[in-house]
Image (cartoon, rainbow, N blue to C red):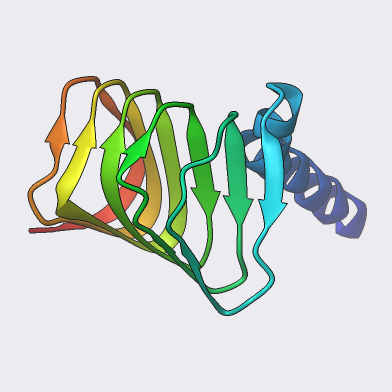
Length: 131
């Protein structure tokens, strides 16, 4: 029984790693580790980028021309995204100043949409949607 539990934990870890950081690394994204509890990114990257932080990420770059992904405890996102974007966090908030020209993936316990514009598809898993 204990061996089965260990195998299930390992399998779960592999699945989470693949659908989290490993997926973006394998797709060639540059990984940026924001080591502070409260990180602000106000300049858009020049290449596909995956931002990781242990706490809050506030993203306010006006226009982002490349695919981006974010992983943090809490995300506050605004700006124009011309390529696909992925947001993963416990709390994810997208403001009314956010426009997504392509697909948006949201994986969150709590997702707050304050009036974003989305031309692509919304995918992912959300436990609780807030207005």
